[in-house]
Image (cartoon, rainbow, N blue to C red; front, side, top):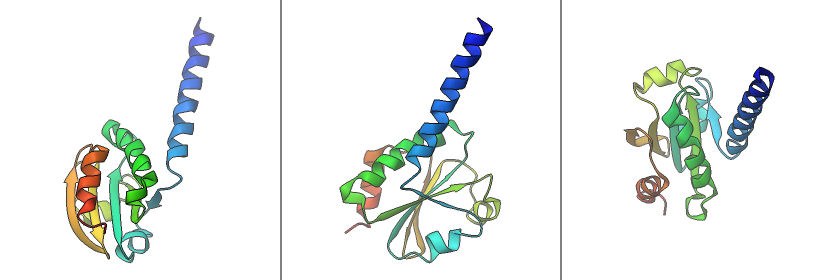
Amino acid sequence: MVKRLSLFLFICLASFFMFELSYASDIKHASDTSFEKEVLNSKGIVLVDFWANWCGPCRKQGPVLKKLSKDPSMQKVKIVKVDVDKARNISQKFGIRVIPTLMIFEDGQKKEQWSGYTNIDKLKKELSKYVK
């Protein structure tokens, strides 16, 4: 019984991590050293997601961002994820206290910021102000 339960848990965890890796392929990841290149020096619209792996709402936000990245009307939007545990300096610079925190940048300038899980309809609405 214990062996079956252990095997079941292992399969569940393996499936979860495979899913997590599969959704991240179209989304950039930035660190303290790459944030400037990926966000501040980017032309156009960048949606930044400050998140952490241990955060439930952050993990719920991930598949929404993946879906957004596949939306034809949002193809001009670059999506960048910043792990607050790994990018402490940039998280501190932007005063991240709650995650997920989402920010919209246009040509390297911060335009908007909000915190908490955001569904795809609200993301599209916010981004449509900048996507032409």
